Length: 472
Image (spheres, rainbow, N blue to C red):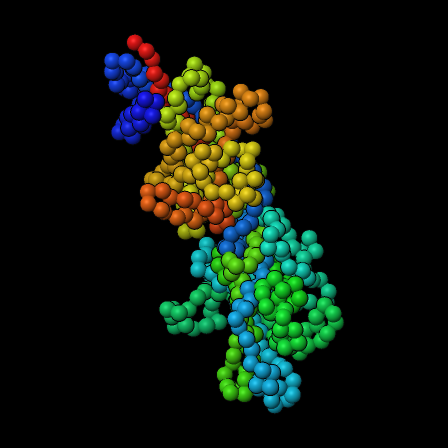
């Protein structure tokens, strides 16, 4: 009978979002189900996100300003390279340089940082510096967005290390318009690694590409997998945004190519490829300026800024919801967050957050470090619909919060949740959708929500539907 009561109340709620007229229904000879509703107000505020776990396939490179708030965000990227274990070079006697000069020589070496999406002015002049790493990032490491490879000693700093400055615009004018518009063209930032190179052991080479090529023939076992390659040959590179403002590239892949020729194709450059993709560690270092603090202190609304900027915190009125209803069934607890329009119109306005995760504040770090998915019990997802984000039923979370308080094992944040912009993957099986790879949103966005301690707009409302049985 209890299951029937729950089903009925859910149907009533789904048929009519207006709960004011819902009363006592469904009477039989034995039982009566009492359905009641109530509405509560929710308080909210902006909180500084601080560093967040950086664990996505997207890297950020550049510096952008939010035209509405005047806040800056800077992105730097660190990458390792994936080695194709099935790739083999020809015998060294087949190399054109070995055949002609008796030594192994590369033609050239370059790294390309590929981006499909970007933000800002594609003609803005930017400058970045490519640094060689002294040791690789660990695949099982938990690196947050404040991780600075230079400060942490991951960058090779001796005079022989690779260090190359690169001025660029996201619209690449070093190639023709026809090449840029070709269907097979992929936008990228290209950095050539030229000049003499000395490895960490003091061995000298004509260039970095030749170092990679000779290492292959001396120690082919180091090229067996990505980890071995990173530990023994090339730990990776750090690309740091040094100057310029106005664009941000979202790097989805990095490719290092070593070019050489064989005796069979002496006029054709062959490629020894290494890719920085989702298979290996890629990390974004994010720096927000002090303007973030001013936005957090704005009490007339709340903010969501990514990456690693601002979250919105809400205090759920759990005590009020449960008062007098301790033995009732908590059928539906619904809350909607309204997005405020931008104050400033600009061609380079930042994107609005699309998907918002709600989780208890005390599980903020463990949720992402444990690589959890959304479960509709202690974590909930809402996508923007028009001008609002709606969590249709967080009753399980409210009930668990209430039980935790009754147990006496709770913190001061026991009834607080945090709203976090996220990106994720999902799989639909029959009528069920599973959400996994739930990560912090690393693309730049800025969203203002109704709320805050001095909210001048309609308050955030939380609507509740209860049900209980009573004997005649």
